[in-house]
Structure formats: structure tokens, C-alpha cells
Length: 125
Image 1: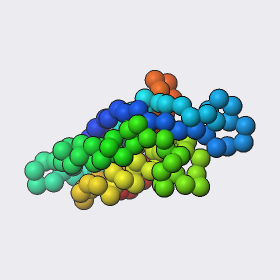
Image 2: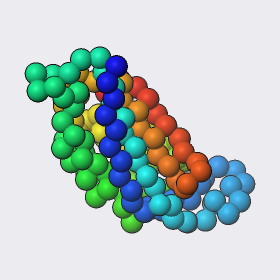
Image 3: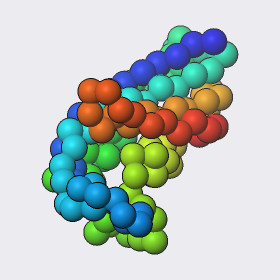
Image 4: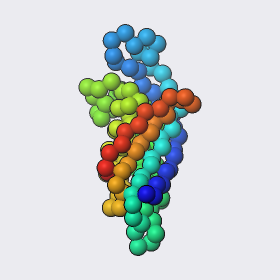
């Protein structure tokens, strides 16, 4: 199986909305790092699994959407706790919609919220 991974970093804010979130219930920033991993068994006629430029363009859109924003204020988080797990799924959906993933069997988005903690969401694109 082939894999291609592209990474992007940006700063965004959020606050958790679960009962008794402690200090995480106050607006705070994270230096998020989005890792987008695409996997598939076959390369296309150009010997690509996916065009890395397309993935970078999709990440440009992710960065433009979320950098310096408070996640809680965005419609895609309405009614949800804006956890790093939820953020991984939201980014996954946007990446899947933003690329030609014809040969991709699995798309994993891992969102790092700091140097030691991350969450990932994996599904077919």
C-alpha cells in the first residue's frame, strides 16, 4: 500500500463545552498541526497516488478557514463540543471534498493540539 502525508500548522482557538471542563472551558489557543495521510494500493497513470499540490491546496483552504478563528463560533461546530477529535473529523470531511481521491482507499486526518496530544479520524474519502 502507498501512503502520502502532507502536514500543515496553524493557530486556532476553542473552549470545551462539556460539564465541568476546568480551564479548558475558557477560550484558549492551540498551535494545531494537521497531518493528512492518504493510502491506496494503486498509482495512477502518472505514478501518483494523489496530486500533492491538490492536498496542499485543500490544506490552504483549511488554514484560511480555521487560522485565528474560535472553532465554537463556526457553523460546522454548532451543537458539538469542539474537541480535537471533532476537529479531526471536520478537517477530514473538508479534505475529502477538496481533492480528487479516485485511487485513495483510506484518508486519515490527525490533528495535533500540542506536542504530545492528538486525535485522528480515518475513513474512505
